Image (cartoon, rainbow, N blue to C red; front, side, top):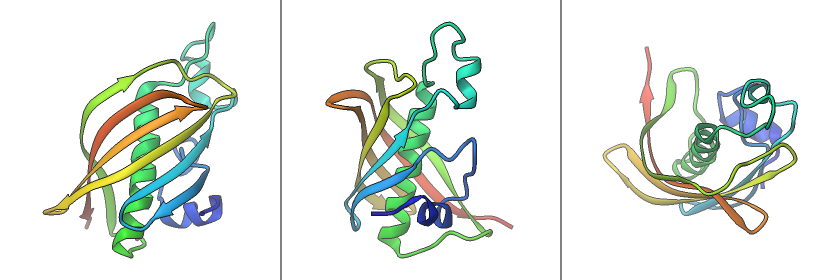
Amino acid sequence: MMDIHQILKQLPHRYPFLLVDRVLEIEKGKRIKALKNVTINEPFFMGHFPHRPVMPGVLMLEAMAQAAALLAFDAMGVTPDDKTVYYFAGIDGARFKRPVEPGDQLIMDVTLERMKAGILKFKGVTRVGENVVCEAELMCTMRTIA
């Protein structure tokens, strides 16, 4: 379990780009289950779309990547600092199964598939209730910045 205060200590993202509200479960080096509450107050809903608010698919992928980062930092026993940044390195097999609307709660299940040469590969599945809304393979890497 990790609440928003612990998440804020781990992730550099801030409003409106912090997309993980709580970590429900974490199995060190293996998997994480995190949630994001989707509300009508999200700034992207004003333009996507005014007549029918839908969460952009790329933001669901970003939310899964943020959950993956929390899993990676926990697995490696690191807390990122101002000299490190965690990047997307690739996305494969991204599929969007149904629209996500205000009032939905995203439950993100992310598993660490492998860690090799500084590249971490994850499998992510996001559900609303019992329904899969998004899935993808995510590749991420941590880099030191000047």
